[in-house]
Image (cartoon, rainbow over the protein chains, first blue to last red):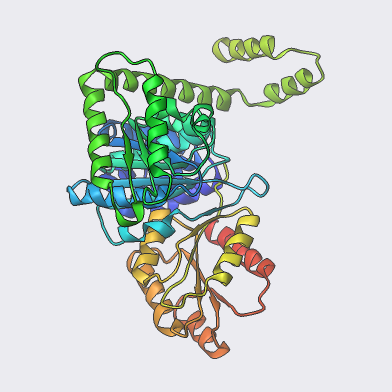
Length: 325
Length: 135
């Protein structure tokens, strides 16, 4: 157990079961502490995730991604307010990049989320993107699980859309909103970025700006080129001016429709199975690595590096020792 | 895995000067910390609520308006009510030595950094005191 984790437990003075029981009755400090613990990873995190697991799986998880400056945080705020006006509670996980040079991060998404302050039906957590055990997708999924177990009905995950990590997050969400803004380049940009494949709903934000119509037209044209089966979900292209909450209602409607579509077509179950398989694989991998990383591991690493051994035979040797040793 | 030190940098009250807060946020980031920056014009309630949700180890309050003797004790008072008095609270800005002494002695402010304080000193103070409170 890492020292920080031990402290986290002692500071709260409870075990995983108690912590989950407390976050389930709305104790926000326990929820905050639980998210820290799952972020840190390790045996304590697993115990906590296991205790929370029966209570999660109810939230509508919505990923929101797009280029820096597209207005994601502002849109998240506008959407959260819209959901709140419908009596739905909202958790937010806002991811910002970690500096690759220092490992530190400035997480500034809360600046644009002031309007959500003071509402017990909202919980916002900022997260740095790098240096997470098992990767970013894993860390966000674990944080989402805690918010889900705490009873938040919609959980929004905000990420900068620029790479595999974001695609993985999208895969963990039920519904992915891709935010575009006018004037970000021609329609070829959206083909190469790979965002067409992950978007369930497109939002052209800052739609009061020149060129918004063109961006909408281009996105629709690209979408029409896609091969779709009859009855298959076709991502709507919606417009928004997030600073004035314009368009929020239509976006929330579309996200809600998308969830209903997933449920009616059985895709929700299929996705849940895929997610379950990924979670199991990740848990097995983490556990295996934890058990195998001993002296023999480090000896083998040195011998593989000097080409004395190969990684494949070495892996088998380690596994055989684990199961038969 | 070692958890990074998490710091909330906030500007309580009405002054709109956040250059200092941003310099500090940047320096703490460069020291490997995760800095949650909340922006201007925060009430003590907003600051404590954000600190709670973000589960921070440290709150850094930047204040230039002169209202520090009202707002800073309010923050630490609210922290106490939330049983969050294990969170390290430091302040920066235009705060007289006499006020700083009272804030430290009576109101749970761990340290006050005035104009001319080096970012290195601030980083070191946080690193030293967080590791102590975590042990």
